Image 1 (tube, helix red, strand yellow):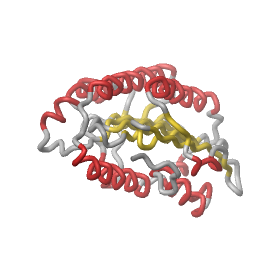
Image 2 (image 1 turned 30 degrees about the vertical axis):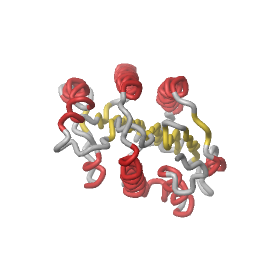
Image 3 (image 1 turned 180 degrees about the vertical axis):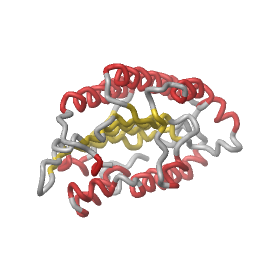
Image 4 (image 1 turned 60 degrees about the horizontal axis):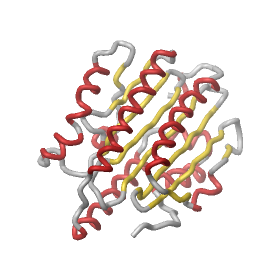
Length: 256
């Protein structure tokens, strides 16, 4: 995607998108108690050895959240930026995880999803409870001509996306960014209610759920097709460290 970009100063757009993630983080911080994981302390401010690319990656953990990633990276000369806010819940409840990814390439890209933690082919109660409420909003985006649905060429990435995931590109305008902000808050507000209302997972099932979560989190990080962009910008060694940080490969805090 970066090869198709034209030189553009996207600083204002970057700040708007990053500001949305900070608004979402404020809601997370108001609800959960989190500690920074020291494994990513040296990634709070990192730069490419050659070129202008730079970024920041911060990870957190707590009693209810197993792993939270809040990160951004930019290549100012091309107008490319990418940012993530992903919240992976602990195994005490089975509420879907919550994922946000925003980017400029240099057009606007966003992905927002509830990551399933049950087999929604057979667990119809789970499907109805957590995905039916998002279906109307999903359909509204498919009918909005301002947004073009983005379909990943990577099989696994398509596999882990829910059928109500919002994965779109659009022109960068005040209207499209306002729509993104609105739906992002809608998704997190709904999710926070689910967390508060969730029934506990039986102790006997928690280890298996935690293992499933970790396998999925690692696979998503390692199979992300955009890792090749990071390799080009930062080199393989730094990219490997960034990818490991996304799934917690070097984490210091391990929740029981």
